[in-house]
Image 1 (cartoon, rainbow, N blue to C red):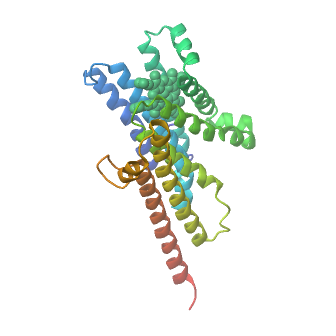
Image 2 (tube, rainbow, N blue to C red; image 1 turned 90 degrees about the vertical axis):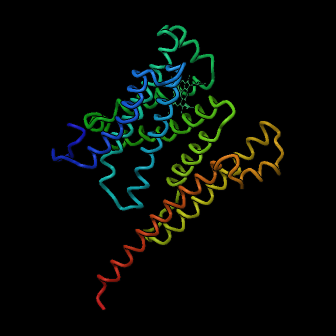
Image 3 (cartoon, rainbow, N blue to C red; image 1 turned 135 degrees about the vertical axis):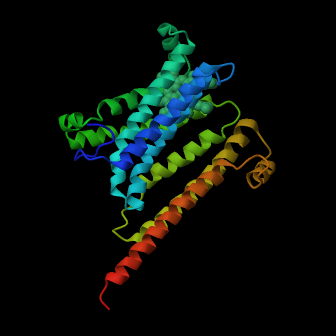
Length: 283
Ligand code: HEM
């Protein structure tokens, strides 16, 4: 089935737009590579960009379920598989670029992967993504049976954690982006652990607000703890930096802002539903 068609074979604008957007970063990168715009170490730039897109798309695929449920937008599920497969494709390109950097000497590639922990972790994550992509077709869903398929695809949570650790470990001094990713991943995993709201939108809204505050402040605290433990930085100065814009917006604030946005969207949806229900109720 073509990626821009829905299950009934009709053209789907949502799937088409997402499909085109998934190609965009790869094509843009290929174009810059061909035009010699990637600086003195182009292969390294390709490794970094493809790695970033792999983890971004992995998180985006995990964001589909909360967005679908909170925004009451069931059609979103139709693009989840496509986003997951794209994450795998960027991951495969990431490994290919790494192999290109080693002149495709597979012995060297394997030795490096085995001897450096962050690469071993990345390789396990990629092996997991490969298993998920290989079993993402309708035929494989039927062959495995819905239950086993769902159980296998829960691997995505562990893959997300491994990817975040790989990202964190390969960062040298600036760990801001890996911490943002870890915070967002923690929110997405935390969402799955929320207790049932029993069909009560207000209870769900409170849970979302609570989760967003908790993960946002844990992210802020996590970054402070990292610099304090790893570099014995002065705690007072770290705290001052967390509340100033001089060192850039800290990851915790970005995660809090994302949480606030999701909470606001959920609140708007809840208010709309309540208004609709009030109109429908006979006087
Ligand atoms: C066999 C598998 C993998 C190998 C060999 C590998 C290798 C690498 C290497 C060499 C770097 C650059 C390190 C540096 O320049 O110091 C890197 C960075 C990165 N990798 Fe991987 N990786 C693998 C799998 C993955 C997977 C599965 C993901 C995500 C799901 C991922 C995400 C990233 C990210 C986000 C970066 C950092 C990009 C940046 O700093 O801009 N990698 N990886």
